Length: 159
Image (tube, rainbow, N blue to C red; front, top):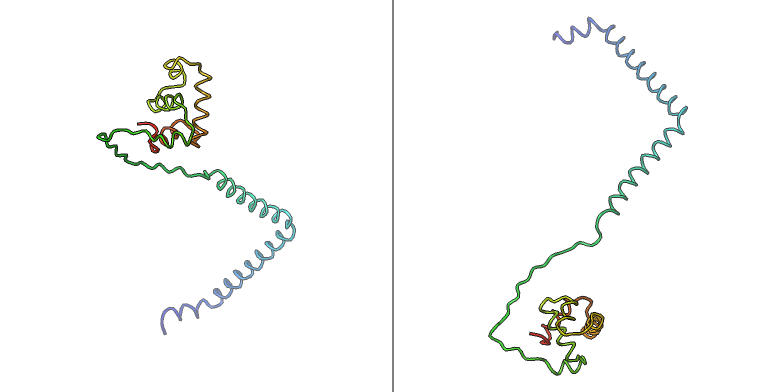
C-alpha cells in the first residue's frame, strides 16, 4: 500500500472528526450570518443605499466638473505679398456705407491704437471714437476689434 493511503486509514477517525467539526463550524457561522442579516436588515439596506448614492454623487460631480468646451488653438501661417500695391475696394466701401472717418479709425485700429490714442490723433472725443467703433462692428458684422481688422484686411478695406 502507498504511504498516503496507509496514513489515511490509520487516522480515519481523526480526519472524519476534523471534517465534521469544520462542517459544524461552517453551519454555525452561516446561522450567525443569517441572524445578523435578519436582525440588522434595515441597517444593511441603508448602508448599501448610502454607498450607491455616494458613488453616484462622486461620478456626477466628476462629470459636471469637466469643461464642456474644449479650446483648440490653431496656428496658421499668413503669407503677405509686400510687392502688391494696396487698392481700396471702393464698391464694397459704398455697399457697406463706410464713411472716410470710419475708414481712418479702422486703419488706426489695424495699427494697434487704443480708443484714447485714436481720439487724440484725430482730435475727436473718446465717445465719438466708441460710436464709430460700434458702427464699424455693426457694418462689418463682427464683435471685436481684432475681428474687424482681420475682416477689413480680407475685404481690402485697409492695407
